[in-house]
Image (cartoon, rainbow, N blue to C red; front, side):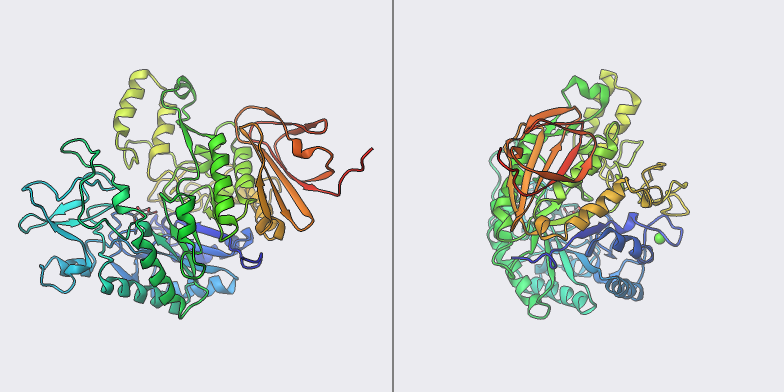
Length: 566
Ligand code: GLC
Ligand code: CA
């Protein structure tokens, strides 16, 4: 079991959007060095950088062309050494993003492999001849659209790619590939890196024989997760990888990206301790209600809403299944999702309170917080103007439908922002200046310019979202909120309430996760004496157990000794 000192608090930095120092509109490593004081002041223990290796940036660095070289857009070997050193000097660990599942087509292994079946790198990738001319070997779909198979200039020969066609999958059945990845990991560990986030590792194994999925429409491809996600062999690969690097670096921290893992699979990915991931990130934390067919959508433009009832069950399950044996991750944002305050909260009417309450609810649970840069100042989705970089395949149709229905331009713009793959990758808002203090030039991604939602405006304001995050992360250092027991209470949704207990210390967290005032009976409060530790928005206690919470209000109570019975 982890001790409070050992529990990590991770700050995710999207390097391309964090801080530019040479005026090219792209964030860089010097920018991260310059901001270490700020990062440290948040109370985090580790920074995770999205990929910074050499890459043609077909997928913002997840298409690596050389794992041993820093992308020149971001810096060079000297500067990465300086970053690691400076982070350590500030008491911060450094986690790199390691893409195990695929490389860029520009990687020299793939270039060699293209030479033909006799090349020694051929077997680093996955090849298959199709039995049917002009048809791929099977009907599996890539996550980025179309088939997973790409034809090359040989007779009906295809290579496999789960993501973009310029990101061919590595063949993990080949022990040389596994050794290469271990060598890469050790190279960076030798340089002082403290951990890795394992990108898309759940896809390392694909079903032998590559059978068609039965449910695809004739002539069409279909996502085939059962054949390329979470297969049992993945555990063996990870165990080998982890054991071989832990032999040299026993304390390396492994955060696995396990998008489609449910809590049971999550348990398997973190066991046995020391031979698997320390923790994993599942994308299944936030069950959403689709509001596209809801008339309300046309008025306020909010495309989705958190299904709080289900969310409570999901959280309780992750907490109970992983809480005892390893550590669940606690997160609201990452670079692949829209910003939480726009998606789960209400970025228009209750931005301040929804940002704070979501954080309170999430981070006071048991586990490792993973905070995306900008979340701590309530950054919302990047405003995009045009129809590009959408994450939805039928996005254009939806937009046409909305225009036909007569939605306002404002609502349409918000919708486009919510489905843009860059929704959460906007430039970090440091100031209210022209380019938000991120750069002296137009940022690559565009930028939201906002007077209150920037670091400068919030840093010295004790009631800001930023101050709230600092308080929360400080609370996280208490055993009560790190290793204390967790219990989800049965209360009427959209109110959520849970308890934490460590020895004789006890806390209750109560929150309204909706945009309307809610009243609920919290039976647990009966006969308790408590003190308010943290409050967001208006909360009224009416009588012994009845509580009324304004939209997105929340309260953290510390339970004192029992009330005397009269
Ligand atoms: C992960 C990353 C995502 C990337 C994909 C392919 O899901 O988070 O951004 O596109 O892997 O590497
Ligand atoms: Ca730059």
